Length: 252
Image (cartoon, rainbow, N blue to C red; front, side, top):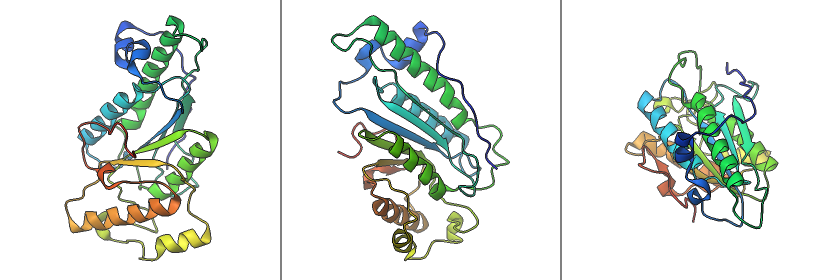
């Protein structure tokens, strides 16, 4: 079963290497009128190859560099079997500017240190070691925790990056080899029962899912229907296996 991880508050001292990793001062971001909520979800199950976790780490670091003051970041490791498990999750907000009228070096340094620390803390979510004990992949339950992130950070442009092959695999649904796929009416029934998470306004980007076989297309079709029913937006171009970079404006 998953074990909750308590991570310390962000701190530490920035270095010249760290400043370069997070972008030079405020130059690494583009001024935005609406703050962002950026959520990362990581699949560390045995079906994920080590090189895919390495790609997830690299793409995560690239995305973190673009965060600005007031943006919020959240990270989750996929639950294994159900919502009954203690989650492995972390979230924090990039410190607001202390000086709103002009760019100050102190604000730049604080942001740079935060982003470097965030990169360091999120390494645990792409760790290739200790994965043999993982007993399942419960994407559906994890989406309820993502919905809680949305509720806790309203009035933000929200983007979800799911690093996964998207093969739900627990006791009720097992998409590995299409062994136990949900019925054609599953999403409609769940929506009628009110048991789907509210992901309204969320932009979804999937990294790690195949689309080159008939089976993978069936899995993709399910997730397209699912996210539409939850109010999220998953565009065809944002469902990929191993992109070179993350899209700049994924849902525009």
